[in-house]
Image (tube, rainbow, N blue to C red):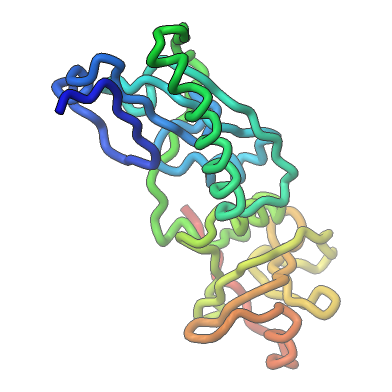
Length: 234
């Protein structure tokens, strides 16, 4: 077997030069961001966390670097600011499949001119860890709301009140004068985390070992809300 071309997607390893050189047309990588922005392991989460107004899919010819190869084709996708990671991953997978379909023929026919990435404007993402999911009340409520959407399903976003409470959906609400960052307070009929800037209303939650439920339902089981969320510093 003498393959002419390789195609990779969602592959988190570097490819050695000995493998890259085997196929005459190289190896194309389908990456869910507008490279060179959000290179690396978690580009979908990074786009949501950053509050980007758009993202997309990049197809590039792999070299020995981490998502550094020359660009073959790209497709832009606008963001509404409401997407969570599974929704955006599914949307970008569809965009990537169609972009690859349109790209393969011209690429194999030597009809595509690549363009180098601008390394000076590159950003790098990293693999997510469980501790990344802690909701840090020293950050703004807007940043934490983006985190809730970005870190689904892994590593999730959670508070410790004092047992773990996973947050699946949240909204930003204004602060009140008496709020102390890290306090869990009542906002209407829902619990909310007081932060350095605004309140994070907990719309849907899941207690440790329990089922997902509305924040209002969780709060009804705690008529005297006196718990405080544990701030996560560093």
